[in-house]
Structures are given as structure tokens and as C-alpha cells.
Image (cartoon, rainbow, N blue to C red; front, side):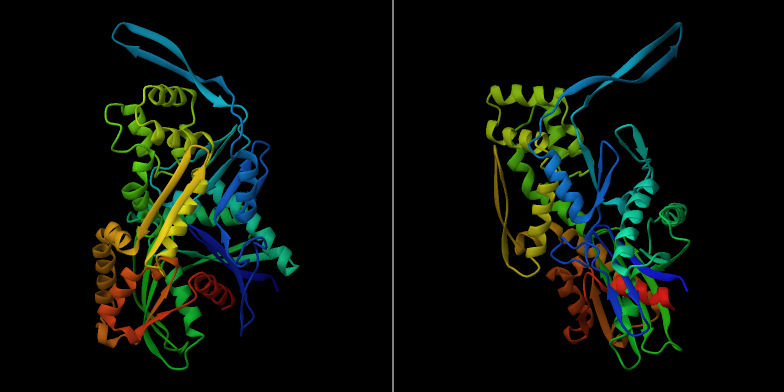
Length: 441
């Protein structure tokens, strides 16, 4: 009998689990992590095309990149063949590349699957599509899980959001891309389950009588909701499901846009569009690492010499040219997470010419993200309406996913359903546990 596992391929974190019919076992696939059962969905690819994931990827990135030397060389990138009116000419195109760059760190791999129009990314001489990135990550994750279990894995149940995209065509394309990636990673059998339904199956293990349940799965990439009848496999039923493309990564971006940009010159640099473009790119995890070009370095150096917000622009220069983007995003995310338990936190980053220190309160955070609350509440109430049930007919509201612990959204659930019904499941393992249960069915 071939071994089948559940894999939660998440936006921020991933996991692997197995189910023996009575107990769920979440595998310690990242032994260097504080929580070995949780592995960051990050991938580091070196110039020699060695690949690392999770904590190991972050370690390799820091070791190879932070405060390293750079050397830019001119490289031919193609040509433009222009024809118009009575003119015709061919022009070579050159770009400057850093020949000392040792590797690329890639994150939010799942977001690339659902991003309409996203073709992929160049990693040195190779072009990686969204499917290639998913395949690389899943193959490494599969190997980690096999090492823990001591036997090969042939089949997998993968989680997927209720909606990869509002477009049905893009939604289907994303699932098929992920399916093909899993096959190419070495899984012979691949099937899917909606992530909130997986979380429901995990919760069902803890109840002894039938309930009407709302699953509120709010993670790093999407909000997914399911309204179900649980407690008896014979009467188990999905009344309705829904989702929206709002989650933790959007909140991180909002914090950066509203609170962090002034530390890098926003508001002090007004008549330099090239610098403003760099500042506005800071919240974009894909764009920021690509700003380290000789031209941008010259622009920043000249502005600093001209005494244009020199302290702030030195910080911007160091952020870009010392490969501190990953560290910066992690500090912002850590601050956001802290505010689920604390009333205030400090987001700080100190390195050479960066001395970022920002006191950030829960009140400020809730003000910054409040515009998302109406959308979240709308999709929740719409899904509930589609189920045919009223709030009073719901027996339990199960929160899962890291963003579900944000007090602003817990208060919303309490207001609609009542505090006694709102329950907290394991935020980081309920989905993968439920996928393992589904895999064993």
C-alpha cells in the first residue's frame, strides 16, 4: 500500500502530515525551525542551481548575500528590430548584471500561481515559471518528509484556496499548474481539497455530536470560508464556501506603505522621480531586490551628496545594496504577529546606515487595515447567506490561519455570532492535519 500524505502548500508557511486512522502526525520537516512542524515557504536557488527551502534557505541567503561585494558587468540581452515609415534599424539591448550575485531568494511562491499574467522569473541563465518554482519546492519538501518517515511517498492531497482567482479560467489554470508541479516533483497520485474543508475535518475530530460550523481560515495569502454540517460522516455536508484574496501579506504591505516608507525618504523627496520610484517599490518583495543597479546607486549617491534627506536615503541605499529586504519584511511580519497579543510593539532594523525604530500600536494597526474589514465581513455574510443558515443556527465558528488571530477580526466574529461560539483551532496545523485525514479517506 503506497503512503499518502497531506501537504499544505501555504503562502507563508507549509507543512506535511499523515493520518493513521486515529491520530494526525504533523511531520518535523524543518528541524532547524523553532517549530519543526512548520516550514517557511521560501526557496533559495544558488548560481550553481542548488536549491534550499525553509530555515535552511534563509540561512544560505544570509550567509551568501548580506553585506557582500557587487560587481556589475554589461551583458547583451537581445535586440530591437524597428520598422516604421521609411525607417528600419536594429539596435542591441544591454543590461548590467551583478556577476558576484550568489543566489536568489524567492518567497510567496503560491501567490505566483494565482497572479494573472505572471510568466515567471529569471534565475541566472534559467527561466522559472510559477510551476517550476512550485515543483522545486514540493520536490524538496517531499524528500524531507520521506527522510522523516523512512519510506517513499507516492500520493498526496494538496490544499487549495476556495478561489485561486476570481476568474474561473485563471482558477482552473492555477490548480492544473499546481497538479502538474506535484507530479513532476515525484507524486504519482495528486488530488485536492479546499483548505477550509480540510480545517473542518481536523476540527471534527474534537467533537462528539453534530454541529453547524463556520470555518474561518485566514492565512498569509487568502481568506477562505466554509459553512458545514460536521460530527457524523453520514450527514457531513458542505452548505457553502467562499473566499477573497485578502490576507496577511496584504497587511504587511499596508504597514510598510503607511508606517515604514518615511524612514527611507518618503515625504522628504519630492522632485526626484527616480528616487520616488525606488521608495514606492519597497513594499514589493519582487521588485525591491532588483533595484540594486549601478544607475540607481549613482542616483542615490548624488542625492546624498546634495544633502537631499541624506539620513533617509542612506538607509534606502543600505536596504537595497546590502540585500536586507528579507530581514526587513520579516521584522514587519513579526511586529504584526506581536500585535495579536500585545497592545504595542517595536519594529526595528539596525545595520550600518539603517537605524529604523518604529513604535507601533494595535490601535494604529487596526486603523491601517480597517478598510479590509468591510470586504472580509461581506464575504463572510455572503457565504453564510448562500448556506441558507442564520447566525443563530451556527453552533461553532472555528478560526484557523495566522491572520485569524488578529483581534479586529475576532471582534467581528464575536459581534456576528457571539463570543461563546468563536473557537480557536491550531492556526498552523489544522489545515495540514485535515488534508492528511482526507488523504486517508
